Length: 315
Length: 315
Image 1 (spheres, one colour):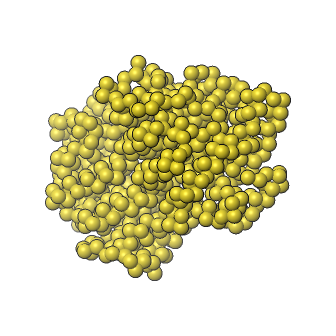
Image 2: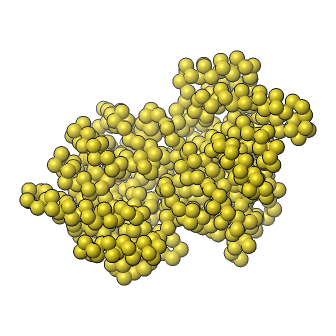
Image 3: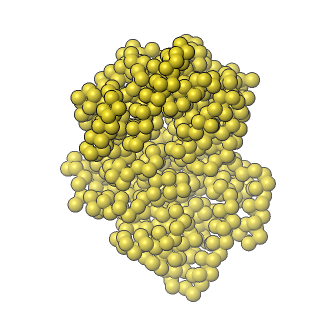
């Protein structure tokens, strides 16, 4: 049963199949006044798509999404589409605290040809019930009213403090079996990802880290949506390709990708990634982040670059 | 030193003295489509101001603020002002995750004649540094650029998960001694409130609960901004008045107010308060809340009303 009302306005285009593979939640480059840097943003997303990413998530956590207004997020997506980025290679982060904001972002994504959205639950109120969370998602789905919408539920308890649990998934799947497309599990709990892969074989379950890319793929996972792909898209893609070819060096490639990840994880992710990009592109403007994030200190930045160099990594 | 740039546009009106007394963060009545119910909102805020509240906080946590878009929040404040509510009797909740949203709400508050704002820190990213949080507040203050702005820092670690600590207050006070007006301490930790009262005698420190109204006033506190004042404004105000008159029954009145609070705290606050208001006004529409909140179950609602009746409380 899909209860989206009959007033539903199907988009012109149909959604692609469920997303899969290696996805990068793009970091968001900033100008001196901390507005989004259009050219660098288009260039970076295009670079990611040319260098191994199956797709890019626009305004996920790594893109500092909640630090940007709905208008800013809409404008930035428009820039990508105008630059010729294929909508099917984008997943749009749209989950906000206020339903009107989530609805606006989701409607705009669909109008842009992007059917796949990554949706945080409303994250201010804590210890809310599954009934209330299901109502939140239901409210958005009904107001958007588009049968081509595909939602990936965003499980990131460390930041949202609102876990996506099985009961919530079950009730949403029961009401909207077409619309609920999958989950992104950013909990870092591989046991949870594994459990979801067994329990929801019909869904696209992404790991929030490449550390579980191979392990997830071997269990039927969709792939990963991982911050580190901003600097190591080729290395992470090579794990996916080796797995697809059933190459003997799958595990070796996974091991190499993990080494990069392990170093990055010692630093705040968005500032750390931006520091590496700034270094690689010899463009210090790339270091800018929006408060409450702060750029890496010079010492931390040097240590990060040296650690990456010590394992022979370069972007 | 107040570093607000010279481009600062002072408002037409000057800010009143620091806020003090008994303030109610108004609950937000909703229509069937969960939009804000204009008439009930104006009526409720007016009722609170006539029945003991020194002032009303517009879109605090109890008002389910983060569940409403910036446009909805702006419109609702406009309704209050158009209805003749005195701007000086309002504190406007303006803290959002995205600085553009916080700035828009704050600029609109000032343009409405409301100089006092209650400002949450950006609350999605966790474990952020004081430097980043100070940058967030600084960024908003500079962009608003109005020397008549008065900010109450909102400390509610249970929901925001971003505590306001002394180092943050100190750095903001040092940069903006006029603009930083006080804090609302919703932690429930009376020792923290007491410590702030000693450390910051120049600031208006509000308790987030009437449970510490008398205790706070006796130590130089500004009063309380408390959810329960939505249903018990007269009872809580009577504590304040008795303290001001130095009446012998101060503590008895505090005890009576606490009894109401203790009962309410067993339920989610906004749904519980709305349930009591719906009962008192014989208007079941008042029970509506926005997801992820849910209305009280019939059983919980009955139990709540019976508990209040058992102590002889009525609105």
